[in-house]
Length: 128
Ligand code: SF4
Ligand code: SF4
Image (cartoon, rainbow, N blue to C red; front, side):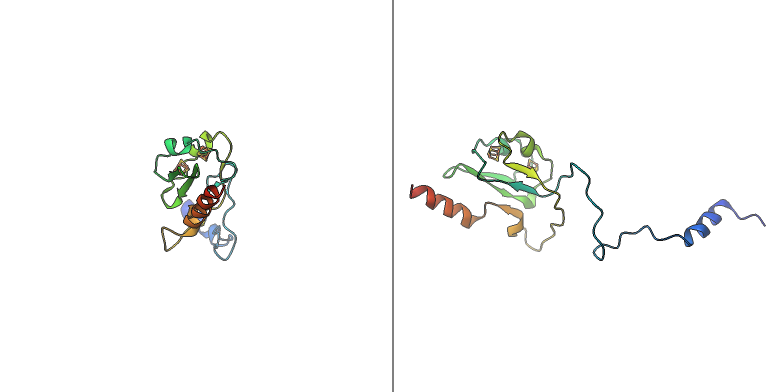
């Protein structure tokens, strides 16, 4: 009897290794070059030009006039990297980090320049 092509494909696949990635038991699938993961901010490089605030489509970035830096609420970020492209001093970078799940939208991991850091910088500015 002739085996139909679909059945013969099914039968041969039965004896192949599964093509599943067993994450989290295994490492996740590697990210490609140019992957846009969690945004990284280098405040020391930032010159407070506000260009990133202007281009961000998601209202992630807030300017802090007292210290001429910005703070990021990454729970709103859509990973478009427009802020990275526009920053004139390379103070921003997209990392490869994508495991960002949290129970709290104000999680410290989703914030650049946290409140206490901002306060410290303001105090340091005043004492100059
Ligand atoms: S990556 Fe896009 S959405 Fe995220 S902070 Fe930058 S401009 Fe805003
Ligand atoms: S664009 Fe760059 S230098 Fe300008 S405020 Fe944003 S992070 Fe700072």
